[in-house]
Image 1 (cartoon, one colour):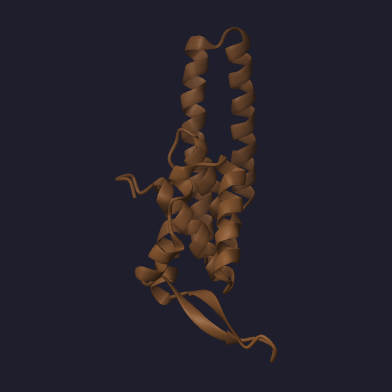
Image 2 (cartoon, one colour; image 1 turned 90 degrees about the vertical axis):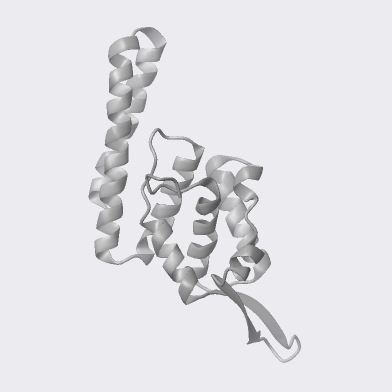
Length: 176
């Protein structure tokens, strides 16, 4: 994490993998596909973001492989399961701050927090909603200041649109 308790890009990918495993055990290929699909559809393809290896999470003791019985013709199969240590890291990542200004990593972290918000306690969900509201308010203040100085023409119109989008986000996060 950065000093301000915000996630670095690889931690966002860790959050995607660990959150998916908190939701339920799954095969390696399914987890890998889910993480890649989600990350690339939120932030676009990026080698920086997709460099995290699931094997590293296993070496760190955050997930484990478990044998499960399948039907009598197939025998056994292996699934990935999150460990107690993995759940603790998941919670830590979920409770992190979100960095403003908004960029592809911030958008990814926000999307992951929203995707896995239901896995947190009610108090933690409320805390995360507050964190997201504060981040949007910081972003709104930054863009408002920019609009005061350079708010003419097309840039001003674009800034108004961005400010409306932030106000919509704040309202939505308040309803969480």
